[in-house]
Length: 358
Image 1: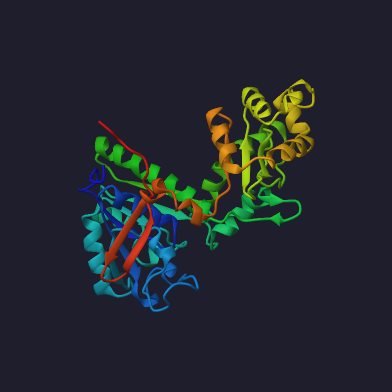
Image 2: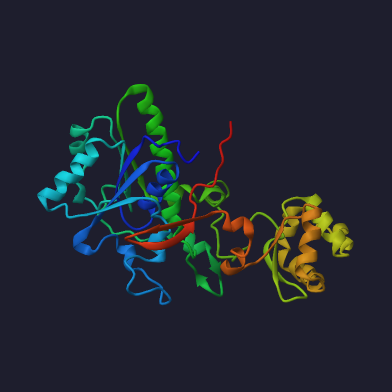
């Protein structure tokens, strides 16, 4: 599968996370991905986004490495005619260009779709913007999380709004752009024509509100900050402490799962209580239900309890740190390592985790 796009050439004119994530997706599928970085500013800005624990003399950061695997790196100044001609020659033979220019910069550098289409009519030009192509507003993930409802819903009444710890809006937009490019490749296969594909972080975020959006659109329920809790299901997202000082979460989605949960915790009396007999009632009385479940769960050690839940198909999980997650051999298999003369040794997680079999 890693050679599906071995004959595909991608020129990446994008920085930070979303655009480069799309480029890495194609590099994992065997495409030749050529990343153009601004030599005037020492390349992609994320090269400088280093943790205190990273080597200050290194030419890149762990953040940069996360979405820049197996790419050919070219440093260029698009204001320099010689450099620009080199990039144009690459684009003439490219299948896909990925960009995230601010409004007007694509035209200023001659890297806009109409200009590039003249030299390569079959080109697929994929562009990510923050708030849409007509907006010149600078967009960072936390700003999008704030303005699309995610931060308001996240956290608790006590904590106030909280951002998600991953730049998830960038990732969601990247997935949208990948899909657009793939559809455009299919379209080109039948029509022979190129396309321009555009995605904004704002639209990607709104689209991803999913059930929270329909809760408002259909039921006029304005989602509130309720931490890990689910507005439609209980017990779902409550955090319970176990005997061995671990934390466990439940995601009980139907009455059978609730019945099996109560049986194992010796709480079968709850099944006869109208307050908890249906999911609707459990949501209404979730705080009382939480207190009753907490008293029993803290009598059990986490792993035996989780094993039983898994056996009985009661959805549950132990809350783990990232360090704990990477102690799992299955997770280590998702790692991609690289060692090149410029960036040195680096490691990241695959962006492509699906399998296609004959």
